[in-house]
Length: 151
Image (tube, rainbow, N blue to C red; front, side, top):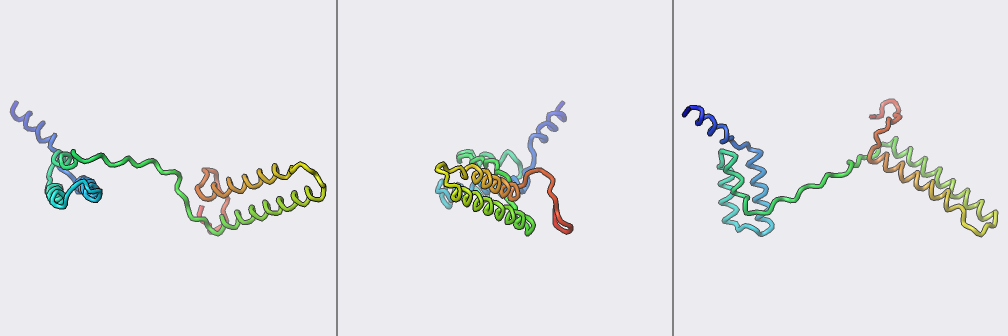
């Protein structure tokens, strides 16, 4: 029965990894940078952190410090536009500009009082904005690529 108790005790004492010690050390350094620890406390805690062999030795070193802020999930990652993407957006922008000029010219020539071109201009600009965002952040739809262009 004594053997079984000893095995249970050794299983609870898990060795600390370098990554766990580094994580604790980062929390201590951050607290010192915020003015929560003196230089002497910083040095003492870092020495103890790097000397810790077991996991349970690390939490008491940061127990009196505030928990680090939780990182919020980042939005979709922006990617750099390729020359193909820039050309497609440039063509779309040129078509939107031509449409704006055409509807404004028609409105001026027609002499209408009501500014009806606002509707086609709105939808054309909105389509350009959506196109740019999809190119920049991805959309999940299959992309047509030229030979040699990365997918």
